[in-house]
Image (cartoon, rainbow, N blue to C red; front, top):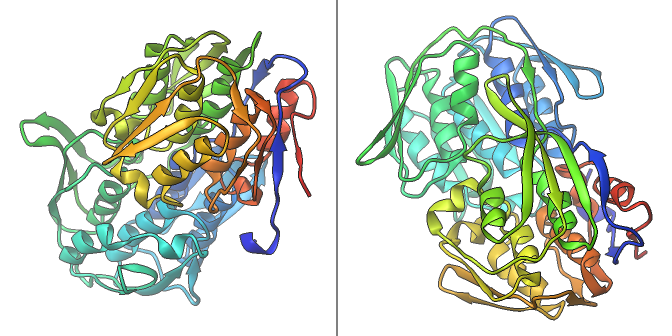
Length: 450
């Protein structure tokens, strides 16, 4: 699917009824990518249930096939991966196209760096603008060689290390993608790979490494969180149940917080504490948000999240919370737009290098719909209306699925409909988003502008 070939403008307006019911969102994207990759590196057959079947993850599945693993879909969300063992991937016969997925591209750099094979990777026009030096620079110390366009951008070629060296690397900024790429490369290295992160980031890679039998040690120290991986383990196939993606659940939950009279439940949501910064922030804002049926599945905490409509107040979001909610700032900005007072979200430099300059695009989304917002350094300030959002604007989405979904949720809580110039790429991460929102709203709150 080439996103630019089929532009899909949509418009969202206030629903005729409150949001209600119990719903499920697609599987966690971060866990889905990793399940396919670790399945390809394991000995035996890994059974995966609940896999996200958006385009981003399907690109990873195709890449694992190209690298020699057997990857089969057995049913809705049910997949089977027969792996080749650590170090056993084969040279792909063609270019690996990662579509719109920065996560897949950066993790794959780590996977390829540890294998003595040559590969070329590309992506869509949005991904080809995103920086890869943050992963290729540390991965070069394994003995791998990388060639990129100017600025470290895709297309990218890699010649993996013949005998990968273990890394000892301190991340300059917290990034789960860079950490994971280093650990994936470290699987093929003899010895201990050591990564230090200044702030804890999502730890799905560490959890899954243990699930497949690797030895991983994590310690909080004065220099940061230290992760150590013993290299060249024999990973053994293990079943994976992918929980609902908390980043996807966030959109409907915020919608319920903002549409008067709403009470909505999202079942089976992943609640890894390194992913739930948005939920903590919303509670600080006074949101009625609670977890029911909390449990652990496949090493990950899971629960049903209930959201109810109620007034919100402005807060200051500390920069240290950013790694646990880096993808949720656009939808938080929508919630903050209705709050009483000015919400300051601090330390958002990372948003400048997402699918779009997400910091500037989020401010522009608000401004286009009558909400005052400003950027001070790396901080985003949202001056809440204390009431309904004026709306009426058309949002330029810049091929950013999270921006598009946030704008459409804004339309549910606005006095005038909110449009987006293109929503076709929402399917990359949240298949069926508009249909699910309309189901919760009991009508056609989101409709085509075409």
